[in-house]
Image 1 (spheres, one colour):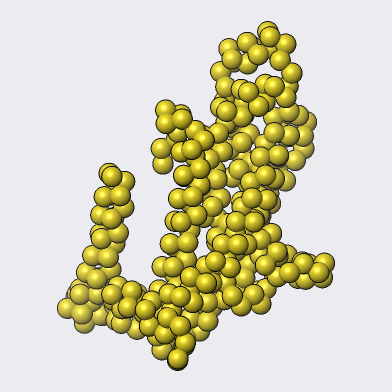
Image 2 (spheres, one colour; image 1 turned 90 degrees about the horizontal axis):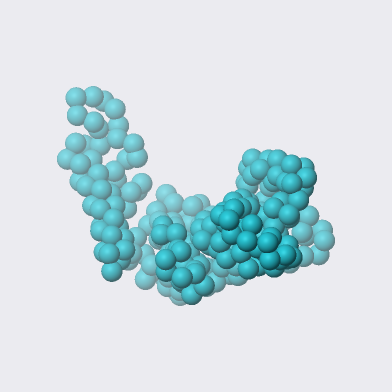
Length: 280
């Protein structure tokens, strides 16, 4: 209940700051007092529409004679989530496998961990067209190329947190398993993985939002016309005539990310006992 109240309170605070800035701009004529410096961003309806205008835009037709904007965006969210979930699963499994491999082999960690870290320095906006083009030449559907972008953003936090979590058990517990002549596989699944679950789920929450971002970015160069990425691009082109639609699309994309994180949090509550969860 406290989390719900806190979330609503912060949301109302952000709305108050947004509308307060617009009121301040209207009172000052769009300039900071005592100067000729314009307020940036401009607090007019063209650049900063009212919050209620954004919400109202969701229930207006996306196109003349078409369905409402919220219906179109919910359909687009479903397409984006399909690619994001697939990339999330593949990236999660890849990251977990890398974490296990690095724990089992110090040589593998020294050899490959620097490349894993370096892979995250590549700008996603530069990598996305390459992956999409390669996927097209391999005969993959466009949404699979989008899923690969989500995989790229997902695997890294899972790999790093899995590595840290698998090394988190107390040395006394590890020595006890050795004294009972436990095989490495038994130590992994009965000691290390249970100890690493809080770390892994923390990474999965980060990866859930990252997979949504990766899917949206990947949809832009792929020509995939059904997802949120294409919708955001279309409304961005029409920003000067109707900015509220772009802001409404951003709100729906945010809700999609929150929904995905909520599903991961629910899985965490079902898997990890209350006393061992990482509250965040």
